[in-house]
Length: 80
Image (cartoon, rainbow, N blue to C red; front, side):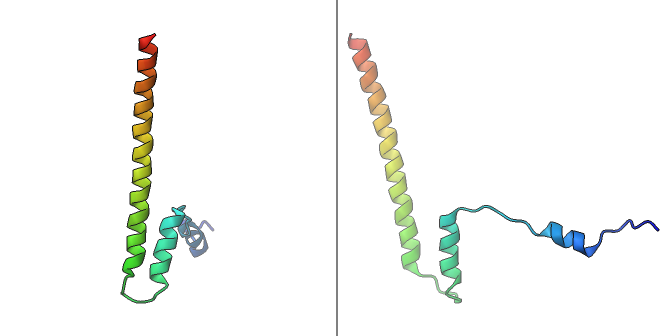
C-alpha cells in the first residue's frame, strides 16, 4: 500500500524551529513578560534608550577620530 500523505509526526518535527536573537533584546522582553501585567516599567525603557544613546555617542567619537587621524596623516605626508 502506498501512503501519499504526511504523518502528523513529520509535520510536528518540521514546525519546531529555533531562532537566534540578540541577548539584550531577549532579556529586555523577558523582564517585561515576567511581570504578568499590562504595565510597563518606564525605568527599563529609559535604561534601554540611555544604553543606545551611549553606544551611538561612542560610534560617533570613533568615526570623528578616524576622520581626524586620516586628515592629520595626509597633512603630514603632504608637508614633507
